[in-house]
Image (tube, rainbow over all chains, first blue to last red; front, side, top):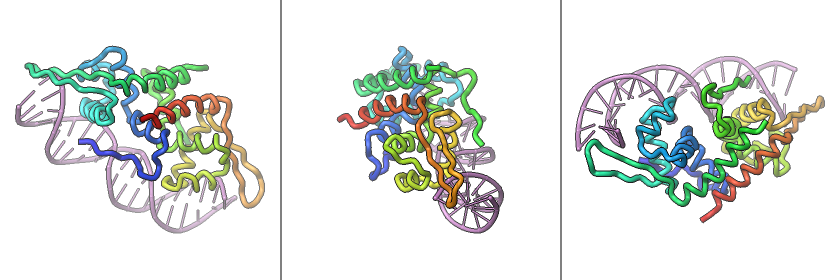
Length: 105
Length: 105
DNA sequence: CAGTATCCCGTGAGATACTG
DNA sequence: CAGTATCTCACGGGATACTG
């Protein structure tokens, strides 16, 4: 279970944004989800360097911050899908800016 | 001394950007430097939660990536100043976008 | 003041095994 | 397949002391 880590005294927007998308795999996860990948196993396949355990943790943090939405299908074998919330969509703008900055030469 | 940590296989722009500005205190340091703070002691005062050791490390990484430029004055007591490079200026756009995203409600 | 070198401890994260 | 619970250990980073 995830608990907030934001410092009470440093609540400026920059730190909030870092808290929300600064996790080790969060930006990658968001990029992949926005690309259309939805299921945990798909996401894990696209980010094999991260363990499934880590991806789960990061996803639950993203869910906690209402960046992604989790849908659990009650079928067997279990099926789960993640989707960007409106808040998640809005942060993709920032991620795209980061990406194009990183691609500059 | 700082060595590159970027994975060879994940060199997309997003990961580069994360590598460059994703450090624990880098965004804060850049925000403060762009605000006009220059000397290590000033920066430390403005980010007291971080140890001087950590700030030094983060600054040297930023310097390594040519985000900031370090000027050493050969006087006593020692005086050092940091300044944003053009690359550092350009990333401030992204940080401002992150900040305003974090301030949304 | 700026920076480095040591020591040392907490915790972040891998491996593994297990439940539904 | 999705997720949780343990065990374990490396290393990130604090405290401290020291050099220029």
